[in-house]
Length: 634
Figure 1 (cartoon, helix red, strand yellow):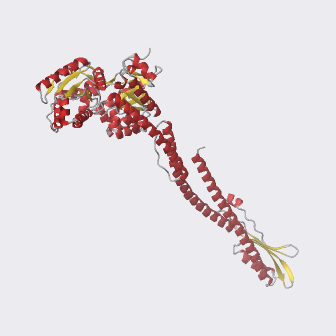
Figure 2 (cartoon, one colour):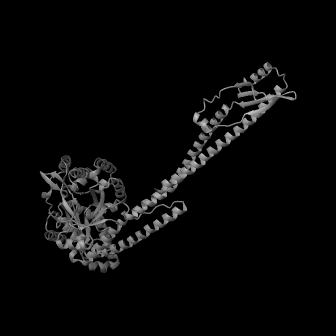
Figure 3 (tube, one colour):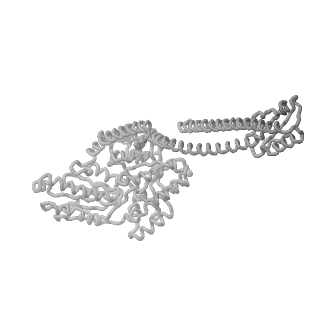
């Protein structure tokens, strides 16, 4: 039996004993008092009537008239006169009338009162003995009414007492419930903090739980900091804080090979010419400050477009990757607007030649970089702040105008979404779930998401695509048991209307919702943290699994999300690529997997392309893997 039930039982028992005992004592006292009063009345009336009869002539008619007059007052149940030898002289008797009082109560509160006796004198001689028994039906009526008033008062007092007890129990139960929830959170590796109650014993318990959560959180924060430091050494250029050459090239290769997320884009290189001369003319601190400002500006530009990346290739070359974003001419205009003011603020004349090329999927990286080097060389040859752009061929575009794209996307969403299937396998080779990127019917065939995602975002149709994909997945889950994973967009999660429609959709498919895995990019969760937490709270009641993909660059920020209910993390290809040949990268991923497990979160590796990568990732503690090298076993 629970503590609260025991407490309620104790309160009910105390109230019952107190009020029941009070009622019994009150009724017993009243009954004894009434019996005593009736006894005295019988004796007094008998003496008074006997005295009156003693002073009269003992004419039988007179005696009978006096006795009848006294009896007819209605206060007596029996009046009896007997001679000294016990022979009956006169008797008057009336039935007991207690019809307005329940028979069970009369039987329970039976009043026993002896009759009153007195001697009637005739001069010095005894004439007879008078016996009087009062009509005490009124006593039952009085006792019954008194009992009713007592019960009503006790019921009111019990109700008030129960209300007070409920308030006290609720005051105790609230912190107990919070402690239970906190203990469950800690059991699920979500280290939450609870408010401290005013009750001393409960406050001590909550304080101890909070200290435990705080200590574990601090430990995880330290571990995250160490991993972040290692990640920066592996992936970032130390002077500027943006991606280094190795990480940027890995990211570029992933974009060129990924059919699902990317279809076309732009690649740009910004060169700071004569860097040694700048150091001599401006001084190293000022030159470093300029390079840092240049890098941060490119990084901010990249953050405005999902999937973009800024990096430093060497001392003087900075690169910018913009998949599914702007056209090369648009990128040229943006770079001029953002970078030239920085150069103008410097005390010496700066040349910033820029080369820009457009690309489409599956274009060889070496060919693309060679073309980009040619554009940069032309810009340097022309001097100043020239921007050279390759001729953009729109052969990869399905439609040429905004109106055509909008019409085609509306028709495609009406037609429905097809889901591709890519397996995610655990360490034992069992299927964790299947990743299901969307396909839309465009240009007479099912097109991968990279073809149309940019246009979907441009037209604000993200939530419509997400809902259509989830609907398609739920229909599939009606027919099969395999868990399915879907991507959600950043614009969709920030939309209250989307979350409401999503809740309605999942409510209609409660069984299927439990096998639905929903994931968002790491950057979306970090930059829209409150929206992400709100989404997690909304979906928790449906038992969906919530995860993040492309995790890596902002892994340490995920400690802020550990209480949101995250189920899994998918680590980015830039971390898993070639991991079997890079011990430092193995150390980083092993630490990330361990930290994820400490938070009760599955660690899954993306982009696994070779058996060597697969083997090493499982050895360092990954719970699952996905990529081109991962196939479902027959």
